[in-house]
Each structure stands twice: as C-alpha cells, then as structure tokens.
Image 1: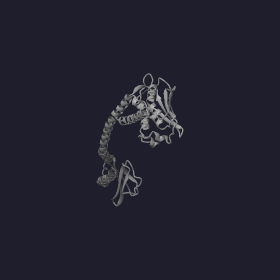
Image 2 (image 1 turned 60 degrees about the vertical axis):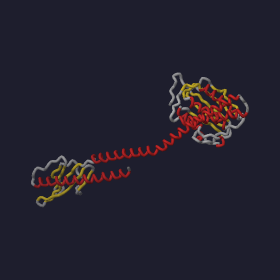
Image 3 (image 1 turned 45 degrees about the vertical axis):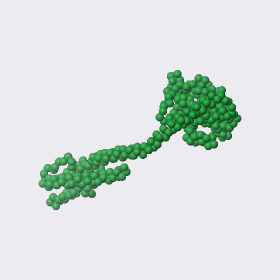
Image 4 (image 1 turned 90 degrees about the vertical axis):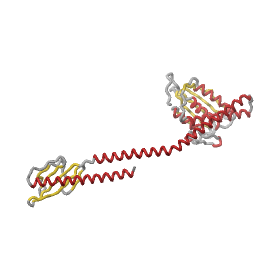
Length: 364
C-alpha cells in the first residue's frame, strides 16, 4: 500500500508535467494567430481558453485581457497556482513586442483519478488482509472449538461421579472426621467445577436474570459452606444480615460471587480464626455484602482479581475464582473493593443495586 501511494504521487507529478507540455503546445499554436493578427493590424482573436497581453519594448501595455497577471516579466514559462503563463517576443519593422499568453490548468481531474485509484487499492488491500486474517485465525477457531467440546464433555463426565459420590456419602449416614473431610473435598471439587463451567459457558450461553432474595440466598450458601469452615475449626459469623434485600441478576453469577469470596476467606485464613459475613441495606438503594477474614492479607490487591494469579501456590486452585467475580461485577455494575492488611486479614465489599418495585432493568 505504501509503495503504491508513493508510486501514485510520482505518477501524479508526471501527469501534471504532461498536461503542462500539452498546454504549451496549444498556447504556441494560438500565439501564431495573435502575432499574425497584430502584424496585419486585424482584429485580435478571442478565445475562451487563452488570455493574452501585448507589451511594447518599454513594457507598456498595448492590449490585455489577462484575468491574472504575472508578478514580473522575467520568465519564459511560469506556473502560478492554477495558471500557466508563456512569454515570447516578435518584431514589427525591427521594433520588438512582447506577448504573454495564459491558460488555466485544473488538477481536479488528475486528483480525482488518483483518489479513485487509491480508494480502489485501499479496498483491495483491506479485502486481501481480511481474507488473510480469516485464513490465519481459522486453525485457532477450530482448536478453540475442539477445546470447548473437550471441556464440555469432560465437565459432563465429572458432574456425574461428583453427584454419585455425594449421594452415596449421604446414604451411608456416617458422621465422623473422615466423612467430613470427604464432604468438604467434594464441595471444593463442586465449587471448582462450577467455576470452570461458568467460565467456559459464559461466552455463548446467556444466563437469565431473575429477582433473587439476596438475604435468603446468602444464608443458604453460607450454610452450604459451613462444613468447609468447620474442618479448620473456624467460626463463621453471619447474624448481621438485613432481610428483604432483592436484586436482579443471574443466580449462577450471584453464586459465583458469594461462593468464591467465602471459600477464599476460608482457604487463606488460619485454623481457629473466624469469618464475619454481613449484608447491610443503605438508604441510597444500595446493599453492601462484605466478607471479613483474619488471615494473611493480600500483598498486591491489583493482582487479586487477575486471571491465574495466586499469591499462595500451596493453597492450590487455578486462580480463576476472583477473575470470574471481577467479570460478573463489571457485567452487573456491582462496585467491589478490598481492604487488606498483611498478617491481619482482608475484607471484600460488594455493592448491589436493590431491585425496585418496577423491577429495574439490569445490563445483559
């Protein structure tokens, strides 16, 4: 494209020179008519194309119909903007006279042709680049398709044994230290499974929004996760939850926010500590959901919500949880924040918009 533009500029210059030469030949032909008429003292010729002036040897103007005059007479050919001037002289009875002829030269036609060529070339280059782009990404699209199919099949194969293991564990009816550990492991696997499932499907499946009682659903999820805290002899305090807080969003998305925040607090807190969970209604139509732990704190808050980032590799996981939470908060306009202090703990805050009676629409 750059080479063609450079070539077009050069071609435009050559076309301009060619047009100038053609105009000069026409001017010279017209010059003979003017000279002959002036010498024979006939009526001087009129022309719609050419304008001219005749001067005596002292530079005094004898005749002129020039629409535009040159700045001085020291030239043979002169191009001034869109006007071409040509000067010559002749003799009558050994007395010299000067003749200046002008012609307007327009570059619009040449500019139009060059612009048309550049536009066509740009479209052609853009089309070729687009075809090249499609050809280059096709292998990646196929690979992505195969990976999605593989993960969907793998997730389907994992869901069944997880369900069977949980059901059979309940049917055993045995409550001891070992069965509690198995239950907690199954819950961790289930939460990880749901994170990956949401991450894979979020790009091509729309999870429908619904009116959710955040207070009741939060208590439900906390009770589900209590056994994970019990395994570390942790106390979960959740008696400061305002009732009747309704929101509009996908239940699967809300579950990801609650589960990931609470399980992270459990994961990164020491044994025999506590977690404080609150849901407080404000007067401005906002409800603040917060989870406070007394664990190790976060060194770099900016990295906490980035994908595949984990401060403590010994805790395991893929580093997807808080990245998914961040994406969900962006989608549903949920403001989130973290206050942390090393070796003292962290508090995660989420500001939800409370649903009004007219069921305020939420961004899809």
